[in-house]
Image (cartoon, rainbow, N blue to C red):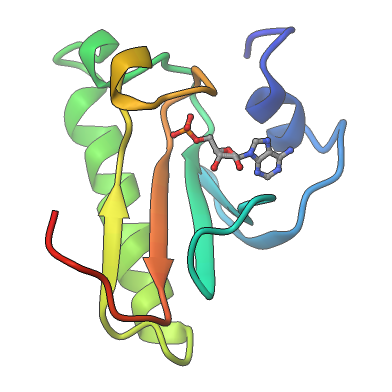
Length: 113
Ligand code: AMP
């Protein structure tokens, strides 16, 4: 956990968020500034800055946690059968919160990347 990280604070329930799901490894919250009818953030509890920072010990664990959460959300959320999963990794890619997370977007029709 990193003291100044907003997502670490949400994970510790120190600041409020709209929780959708939580298990030992990840939390899922509603994005505060939604870009789609369904816009959730899948946030691994282990603090990692971005994909570039993953090492061989946690790369498979964290990617599995994110994919598993996305599959569960898709199965259990009405209207989220089809979804887009986006990870902004690095400032130039649009990342603004430097705690690795995936955007789960659904409930609409999205163009190709
Ligand atoms: P990124 O640009 O990929 O780093 O995405 C950060 C996302 O976090 C943005 O979509 C923000 O709207 C969202 N966000 C920032 N602060 C909060 C918060 N306190 N609760 C929920 N979502 C947040």
